[in-house]
Length: 202
Image 1 (spheres, rainbow, N blue to C red):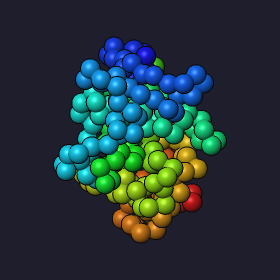
Image 2 (cartoon, rainbow, N blue to C red):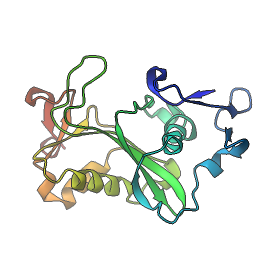
Image 3 (cartoon, one colour):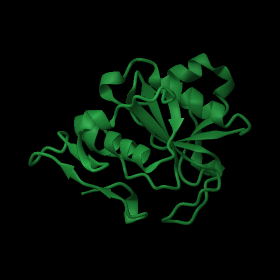
Image 4 (tube, rainbow, N blue to C red):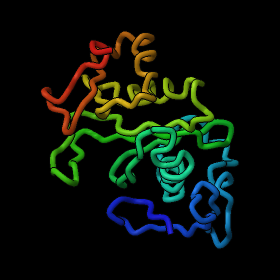
């Protein structure tokens, strides 16, 4: 059984089959039949193109598979992803009928479940692009979408520490001078003593 959310809330699990010691070769039991992993990460819907908000349990499952299974937690020296709480906004990036990545947002005034501290600005928390789809501009697309989604906010955050895979931030800020004073690397909950301007520290 795969547990989709942290703290088992809401309770939501999916049955999966995989060879011993290899969870990358999965079959999932959905809608009363078994599906290969690659089929679950595909869509025939023409409306699923570009960055689309996650709204259903099935879309949450896709985020789970991308972060916990497809790329493999901690593989290739990369950071392991935590399970995403249902309170976080998430968008999946679709390209040519395939889910190629996603990003999550901690919204302003969203309270941390551990410390009860509330975020003081919107924060880009998690970004993942599948390894085989990198170096194709998807990171820039995600950053542009995030900044555009909060055009009325004076300041925006990116969770600290910045991943080594987030080199797209430098390129993005080189191309978009208007965002250089807006984007900060932040620690929760994002007070001024917990922010560092990204452009000034590149």
